[in-house]
Image (tube, rainbow, N blue to C red):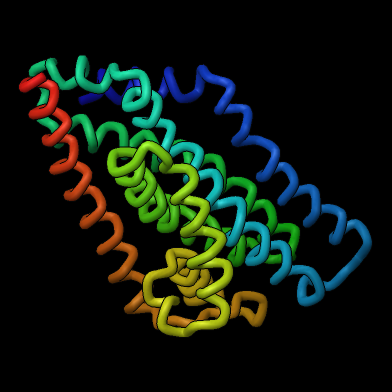
Length: 236
């Protein structure tokens, strides 16, 4: 399992795709720093930067890049079947790749969000944003790893979820927020550091339970789906 994780990390971070992880976090910190340098109150820029950019764009897009990258290339070039010929439980393969996706996403997003919290004048807010980003990294990674096994266009479907489900429907139809990871993240951060900057619209119990449901259900389905790849490889 550790070998699979190491190979996955090397393959993910050794490609040009890894460079795509840097611009958005740097933009997030840069905008917050500019607002702080101009002595703007966090009430004036906090929601736009933290929620509008950090939680709505940076976190899910980074998770999408990483989550679809840990398996996507192996599905596309056919090497996944070769990996499945190794004497490894399908569960271990998925958990290793899921773990790498969560770790890379969390590191890439928690540090800039913590920095933004500090720039907003509160270490407590920075910690809350970082913890919420970890929760979001787990849920988003599980979803996007699963998508990479369900379709050949995981990035496209991931963007539909981020932009349409969370970005459009989630802002106008209250019922869709129950299945919005972005809303869970906002609620968790707001619970840890209550502030008007974070407009939470679901309960904390819903946020925690549904984050866990996304992580567990998507991972279980991914393990089962990987088993079907194995069967296809053995019968071809």
